[in-house]
Length: 93
Image (cartoon, rainbow, N blue to C red; front, side, top):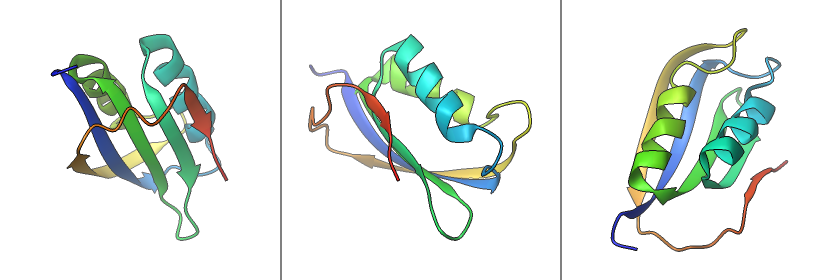
């Protein structure tokens, strides 16, 4: 478990109305990362990712580009203690 990590990310740019949440779930499920993603009222997307560091890094790299219609301006990342709090990856509201 030493290589497991948890991050909290806020994604800025044109990230709502472009299937960002559903595509993030698809990528996280494919790579094998647990957590959640949701839209925030001010227009950003917020996510928590937990899993092996290399897998979390891969999902985070994808978030820096996003789906085809997105335009990501920046991603703020906060590293947090790993909690093993999730059994899967979910879109929350």
